[in-house]
Length: 288
Image (cartoon, rainbow, N blue to C red):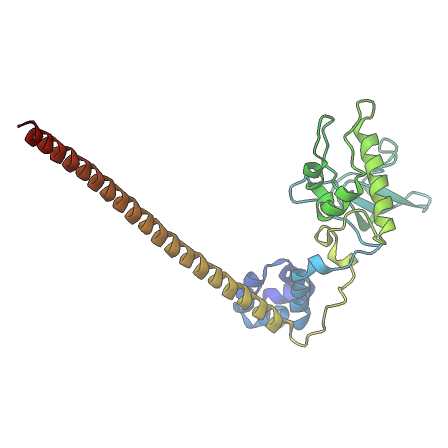
């Protein structure tokens, strides 16, 4: 059975984009069909862009889809269209995934419970993650170095708009106030969005960096980068090995110095004994 006739090539290419580069190379070598479908410049171009995602530009239309790797998974917000019995169309926001059996209206979850006549429009992303700062905290830098604030830690620390949550303010009020101050700070620096980490955004909603070049063969570029990475790792291993050898030599020399010091100490003791012995003999001679 020819499975390639049963599975659309679009699905195969989408799967190929989710693979890491080494796995993609292994997949291409499995058959001529996989090589024809997956070993294309467009797919390698997509993987090349992933390697420089931290350099992509955040725009006002960029969608924030993840929080810091050290933070919790923030809930994703989705946009749907609902068609009622009178063919009226409503835009509905919900935290339920498109695969969920129940799509409820976020603004009024008890009013509607959608199980049919619902069309998924797009993912609206999630809110930037701001960790909770304890009221008795005295070092805001420890707080800033977590969550989505981390990539701007130095700038935010100098601006000094982060403050411990007062006793008379609940967490939600405090978080909204921090976000407002954060938004004003970013807008004053000509920055879009709150979080400034491009890896936290949907790559399809980012702009390419100005330094990005249009290569005719993206596969060759990626292979060169992988080779350079492996070569650098080998150089690091070599330097670390040289360091271990040098440290072993230093330890051997330290042991030799210690042994020589102990030998000198024993010689000093022998000299002192000989001097005392000579003195006793001289005293005995003088007493005759």
